[in-house]
Length: 123
Image 1 (spheres, rainbow, N blue to C red):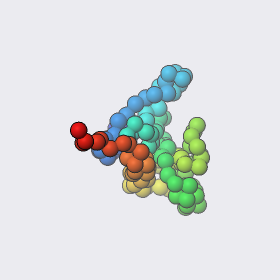
Image 2 (cartoon, rainbow, N blue to C red):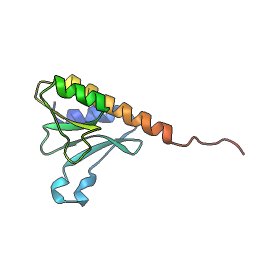
Image 3 (cartoon, one colour):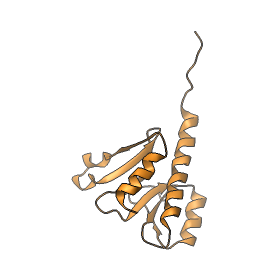
């Protein structure tokens, strides 16, 4: 998988936006591409060094994946309790990585869908 294929997959999930928000902190972070659903991050990757993706998962899922795969590692600058780095070209297939990106998307979408106020139709 290359960065364009990965980007197309993420954008295909629906209601997804992308930004490179970290360059304002340091120029070296200009290449960090972040995908959002409901204005909240669900995964991020480095466009220039496309070797991994960080995803949000449950602590239980993270523990299980750490026991099962060697191509998972600590996320960079994110909570280790809720985020995990998945390395491409390791012992995890691209299909499995995409499934975990989708799982991350679902977790974030579910969490923030419940927090959004519903529009009132009373007049």
